[in-house]
Length: 442
Image (cartoon, rainbow, N blue to C red; front, side, top):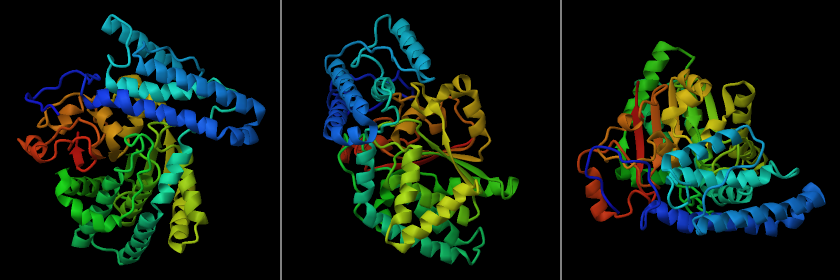
């Protein structure tokens, strides 16, 4: 893997031969499309039972479109305009036309920016479903997301019992400067961080179950957090509470459904129990995205599964969390910007309403690799570039990036840190074995 040598960022990554981007487009994305095709064939009778014969025939049409999309990708054809009627179609198509103007040729799969073509593939999959009359809300990744969480139930159960025990301890109303506050805060923040390893888009849909106790794992993984701004985040929350008592809003831009989402809910619960946060806005994707990204349906599904479980700890957590939704202490927010081709540096221009909503938060936590790539423009930044610089002006409120490294973009490291790690771990930026807890403040 090539190391950076200058303190500047080059243009957004394109899939050049031997790059991680190239391998993604060449190998991983076609596998994901194949799994969608296989699922539609395998589920054709179930689709007919639920959606009727019309739905079954439309499933065949979607299969054909996904097969065509796979062929276009593998043969490096030009990207095509979307055909559906969603409100974002005009935005995507305008973006493609502008890319054509800027490149002075039609963008192709192995020649356009990696982040763009990867997002474009998922948007084309949804476009195929949007062109049907019965399957517009069909989630081709639903089964894999649910199976991944079911495979991680033991770890979730252990952590569920742990959080309920912690809540009992916190009834003692610890002083905000108590060492126990930081210990609880750090533990749940880091479990949420390492929950980000459970990413089905990286494994091309293969199960990535969490088997070990997350609490025990934390102690083993301490040295693999390359930037750890945990104390800074706690200080920001304390200051926010000083400035806005009982009115602190956290915006959490989610990444993966399943076990990672469960750890995110546990983190938020502890932040509220510690009286660091009052309100939480959970931002989900408004369509199936990157295989395992959380949608509103995934969020509600996990609460339902916990509530129907035979385990009392799961039932208790489900009850607590459903009540928080009912009391508006938690809200589920769907915004189309998360599934547009833009990075976040242009959000204020392209979606001022969303930027204003985020600006009303006291803290924003961005989970995962895709959010990190969009925060930094997915550029080839020098490792030592300050994280805040790599945001390119995007800073509606204090930002915390919680991410395990599964794509070759990272900033904010200390001098020589990246080069030193690369000597022992050549794939350190894409393996998911290293993490970041990074803060940027206005």
